[in-house]
Length: 321
Image (cartoon, rainbow, N blue to C red; front, side, top):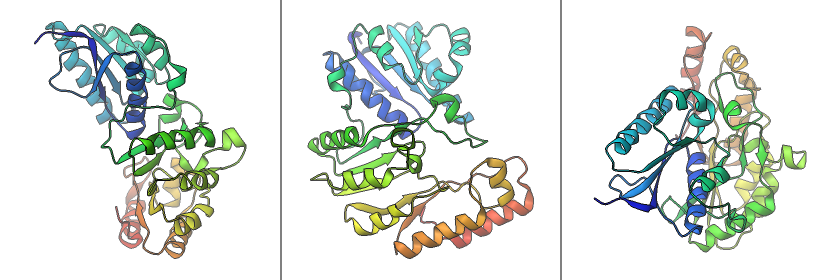
């Protein structure tokens, strides 16, 4: 197969936030009239860009394995250039450059301008907020902020992604309107911490204000919330979910644990009783709400008693997912 030097294959690993970053990058590449595809296993693209994940051990290993796979492709003459970006590259750039020097260049999580420059272009400001969607046509993610100000003991995201940076409500409404114009029917709100949206930009938690604005975008049947942090949870959004027809009766809340001892060691900023009260509020205000959560076992200092508390919590909390 002949190599197409004017074609780029973008490989995305990790979470939905990474996927959005790839979509933004691909729209910029597209704006330069360069052919771009996503995660093609049978590609004639001369350039491969791997958007890596560096969150947990398995994700790191998958990223390294993928880099090495395309290093072999380059050595065998099946691709011409290999670039690596994303969380793993942000956190371990110098180590990766030393251990895998075959990669042409490593970029961090906020280096889209440098990536485009390395490809021979410049950042098209008029296309900021636009994306080349990777998801199926009926849904898309809306990343409302970058980074995180929390200090959870088990999480490296603030180290990798930095402090929270919220996008303005106006910019997010415009981005949503563009997505609806493309045929998107379900908008999935994502961030490292939806609950704290706006504190850096407006000096207060402004998720309720954002939801009200997005719910008013014409032609958008469904809005779904992912990654709502449980501490200081804004009760107002429960009433919005109940009262707005196009906000789904669904919440993704990563409780992580129920033991006060473990929650304290995790630096989660919430107690067992506060967690149970929040769950009761959700079930009371939104009958039939679907709650998805994430739980973490084996945290240092957990012990048998705390683990048993967690098992009992799962059995009684009635999580839908």
